[in-house]
Length: 171
Image (cartoon, rainbow, N blue to C red; front, side):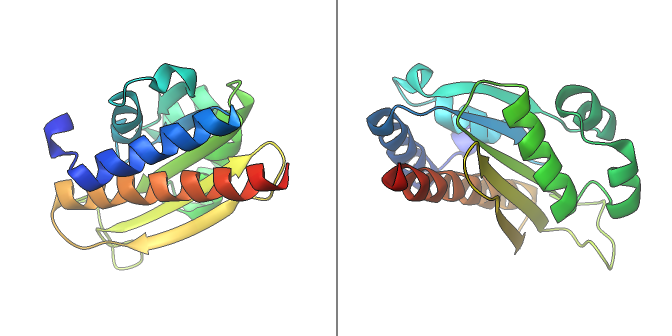
């Protein structure tokens, strides 16, 4: 699957690793629709072991609950593809790791699974740190499954980069 990670993703991952290394902070990922691709992009970079703490692939609702304590009632109320669940995933990832920053991704990559309310391409992101409010983003990507997942990986890396840059400059 790494062959699907383009040079733009590779550059964003490299930049993030260098930024985290310079601030001596670590990251964790909590992924659903990307199935571990954000983690793969980060660990593809030499030296990533200094800053990549761990990754949770929580593809099923059961895994979201079991691995990062997303309440089943929250999923039942808002659906797995929602801002509320993205926040809960990110917060749970921080709680179950020693990382300073966490990013979560949950969405509909397609080709099936979309609805009028939650179409293919809808992806929710949350990026949290131990010291700041969550950074949230909702995207409506277009393209096939691989394109939607690649765009999601890029967005997750951008959010982590922004969060690290913003929060570490304040420290």
